[in-house]
Image 1 (cartoon, helix red, strand yellow):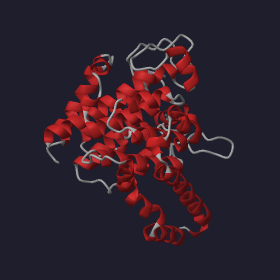
Image 2 (cartoon, helix red, strand yellow; image 1 turned 120 degrees about the horizontal axis):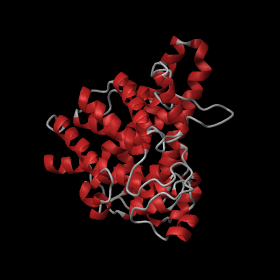
Image 3 (spheres, rainbow, N blue to C red; image 1 turned 60 degrees about the horizontal axis):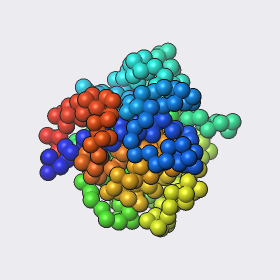
Image 4 (cartoon, rainbow, N blue to C red; image 1 turned 45 degrees about the vertical axis):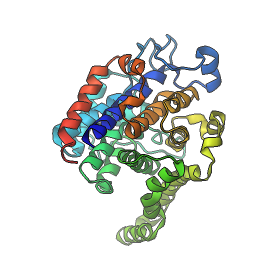
Length: 357
């Protein structure tokens, strides 16, 4: 049991870093452009000189997706709990150490707020009518260690307040906080669970969330919030509507014949897999659920274009959580530029928490 679990934990960290590093060179490009210029990407390449975010980035090296995943893991290892003060500190240290290594605008602005002394409860960015900044996938991309921690310490289903607060540290929009809850649930369902049908997995992953956002629990929560803050009733209701929109976006997958659809169908359905979490998360899940025990799920989501590095890091983490590190070919593990550090964090995470389970 423990050996299998340890392999899954290594798989989560490796999968996140591999997906990120493998597809950052084609970030923002379309599937057509990738096919015309690279064929089918299955191995590392360097970022070109004209890369939008990281020109000449060396092959096999990762970006903010992995940097912040490892930063959160380091905090959990050190503090043995979700310490939001320390996680905020680790965000500042990460940006200072790595510079602008793929950090999204929302994340950079939020970290600047933290650095300027703004408390983590007020540092996050929220979308406005004028733009959707603050609705990106910058929280789901780094949240995997929290899912591992919650499951290993038997706290899955608990600490919801802390999860929302961590999400809001950089992305304060309710669409993102809901996506964060959803993704933690998905990751946790992969750890003890081996499924043959995407329907089985979706049912397990979404069961409690549906009740939280649709059932009596949700209605009681809304009523209690309005009674406590009647002047905010419209805001409370609107926030709940936005949260339901995110969950409903994922629930679309329940009605789709995923195994029969092709990449172009997912591209059309989910905004070409762009960086808005409303599109990025279901887009990534679709590829994962179509082929959850095969490395082709990782290749397919990255070669489909869009926010390639983050989508692939999401799928990589899920593949690792479900199948363990063995799902990743040796050339992808050995070609990872900072493999030793990624594995070191994984091993220290295992030493700190696996004995609890």
